[in-house]
Length: 430
Image 1 (cartoon, rainbow, N blue to C red):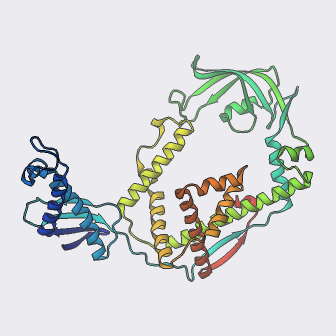
Image 2 (cartoon, rainbow, N blue to C red):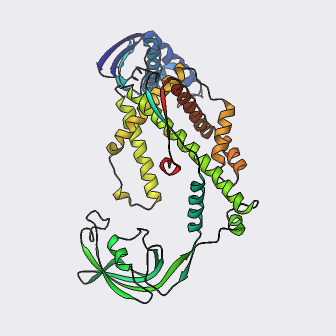
Image 3 (cartoon, helix red, strand yellow):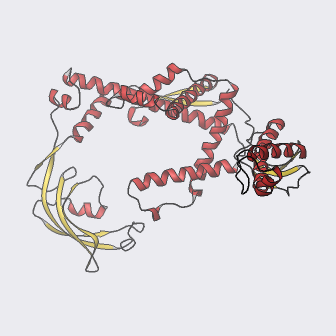
C-alpha cells in the first residue's frame, strides 16, 4: 500500500492512498466465491451457478462493497503506519475504480493537536477552603423552617413575605388580552414572581381591597403583543396571610426524618450535610481552577469537526432541557454557534486530560470509584438501591471512573503547582 500525506493548513491533512490491484482482486474473488455458495439465480440450484454468471448479476454491487471496506480498513492502517490520530471521520474522495489497477482514493481529515504541557510546575493555583460554623447551621435550619411555613389570615396591610390571594383582569387599550385573567391566584409578596409594577401595586393592600395597577411590560417580554407596552390590571384582594414558622422542636426534627436526638440531632445532621456539600463545592471549584490553568498553559488549535460536534451536542441538550421546562421550540436557538465557545473549552480540556492520563498511566482505583458512587448515593432516600442501579450499567460506571481519573489528575497537578489556600464562608462557596 502506498501512502502520501500533505498538510493543508493547521490540523488539516490530505492523504492519498493506493491499495494494490492484487489485494483488491483477492478480496473481490473471495467474496464472490462466498456469495456464489448461497446465490439464487434463475435456472440454477442454490450454490450451483457459475462464477461468471454470479459476477454478472452481483459484481457491480460487490465491487462497491469491497471498495468501501478496503478504503475504511486501509485508511486506519495508513494512520497507524504514519503515526497519526484522526479527529473524527475522514471525507473520502474515491478515484475511478478500474479492475486490474490499484484502487486509489484521497482522505481529507483533521488530526489531534500536540499538547505542549502536561504539568503545572510553578503555576499559581488558588484552592478554596471552608469551615462550617454554627451560624451556617442556624441559617440553613431557618431556610428549612421557611420552606415548611404556613399562613394565617390577617386584617392588615400586606407586606413582603405575606401570601396574597387575588383575582385580576388585565386590559390593554381597554381590551382584555389572552392570559390576562385569573381567579384565586396566590403569590408571596416580594418573591419576585410577578412584574415589579404589579408587586409594587399590591404592597400595602388589605383583604377586600379593589385596586387598579398600571404594569409596564419589558421590551423583551415573551408575548409580542405586550412587549414594551403598559397594561391596566383590575385587582381584587381576597386574603392576606402572614407566614407562621413551625416551632424548632423535636416534632419539627422528626418531620425532616431525624428520629433520634431531637433538635440537637437535627443540627448535627445539617452540619454533616453542609460539610459534605462544602467538600463537593471545594472539589469542583478547585478542579475548575486547575483546568483553567491547564488550559492557559496549553494554547492550541482545535479540530473543527470536534468543536462543531460538541456544540451541536450542547445545543441539543439545552433544547431537551428547555423543552422539558415548557419553553416553545420556536424560542430555542437553532444555531449551534451560540454554544461554540463552551464547546471549544470542553474539547480542549478533553484532549489535554486524555493525553495527561495516558502519559501518566493513571488508573481508576475501584475502591475510589465505589466511594464516589456512595457519595452521590448519599443524596437519595435509598442509597443502597442507587449504588446497585449505578453498577448495573457499564456506561454509568464509566462516568464515575472518569470523575475519579479527573480527581487523580487534579491531585497530581496540585502537588506540582504553587497552591495558595483561600478561606471562604459557606455562603461565598455556594
